[in-house]
Image 1 (spheres, one colour):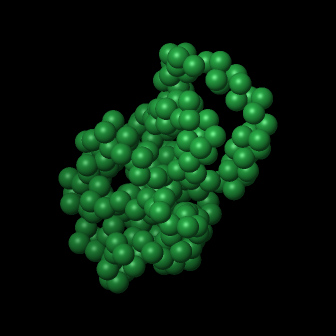
Image 2 (cartoon, rainbow, N blue to C red):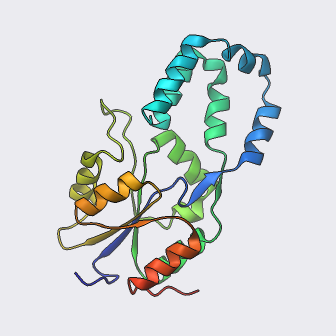
Length: 210
C-alpha cells in the first residue's frame, strides 16, 4: 500500500517516545512533600513492597499502582500521582508531531497509561496532545486490563479506530510492541531519538521539514 496523508495514520506511544520523566521535578516534588515520615515508614511496609515488586514484575499499568496506593497508603497517593506525572517532552519529537500535522497526516496516541495520568498530561501539554485526533489508552474498568503488548490491545485498536484500507505506522520504544504490530500488518518504527525517527519517516517518503 502506498503511504499518503489520505490513507495513513501515525500512532505514537507516549512514554519514552514523546515524553520522559523529569527527574529534577521529581526530586523537587519529594522535597516539598509534607509527609516525609510516611515515605520512610513505607520502606518497612513489607507487604506493600512485595505487592509493588509484583506489579513491577508484571509490567503493571499506572492505574494498578494508583489503586494499590489508594487502598494501602492513601497518604502517599497524591505524591505518587504527582511523581508519575512529572514529565517533559523529549526534544525534537514535538517538532516532528507539528510537522506531520501541518502536512495533514492523521495522528493517534496508543499508550498503556490510564485516564488519570492522561488527563494530567493533557492539562500540562495541551498544545502537543491537541494534535492527536484519537487516543487509545488502558481502560481501568476492564478486568483484566488489556494493555500492550497484548495482541488484543492492537486488534481492538485496529477494529475501533481505523478503516480497512488505512495504513498504520506505529512509533514505539518497546520491542515486543513493535513485533506484535508488524505481525498484524502495521508498519512499526522502533523509537530511539527524534533524529532517528525523522530519518526513518523520510525513508518512508513522509517528507517532513528539517
